[in-house]
Image 1 (cartoon, rainbow, N blue to C red):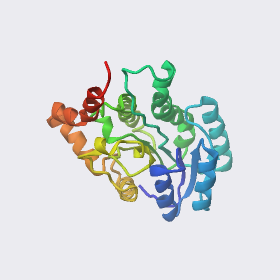
Image 2 (image 1 turned 30 degrees about the vertical axis):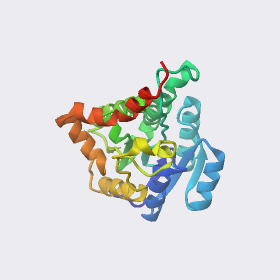
Image 3 (image 1 turned 90 degrees about the vertical axis):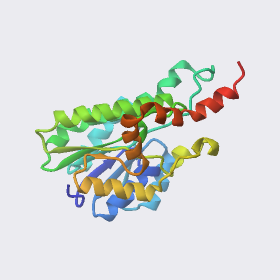
Length: 260
């Protein structure tokens, strides 16, 4: 698809993949709107990307999504591309009693329910456009889980499934449905991980990953799997137990150090 002269809304665009995507899409001559729920990060992003438009919004909040829709469709009526990028990732030990039980599903509200609700909210607007697209940012871990982050991986597997269904349902519209499944990418999301748990994982530079994503959209590659994400999908089919065992090593170390 043509990736110039569009009006693009990116959720979670203040850092990491979303920020880099905003930067590259601005360079291609698009109008870019980024959202985030951290005011300080929004202000920093605005300073670094003065041509971008920033809006405070939280994809885990239904009312915030409705307010965002009202504002974007009023101020940016030409908006024709939605990139559902906002996401959080936690390492979770299900053996411990840490935190409230409702905290366990925080990733579901942001990573899975957020894109679903955003898509449903903006769909009537996007259907009116002659060229439109929705991109859902899942993960290479949509295809095989990293057991240290059980809820995160479940949300990304769910988002992958939802995207497949969405693409089928929208096949008779002008909306193209893309899925970006990043590999381990050099962003804040990985900053809290133990280096020992990252052994054997090739971390992709965010600039390189987003360049692949943009190229994939331009080539109408509807499932974009840069770097090791492509290998994860292939291994999930050819040797699912082997790749699961490899990704289970951090949990094995966690259990070995745990007091029973």
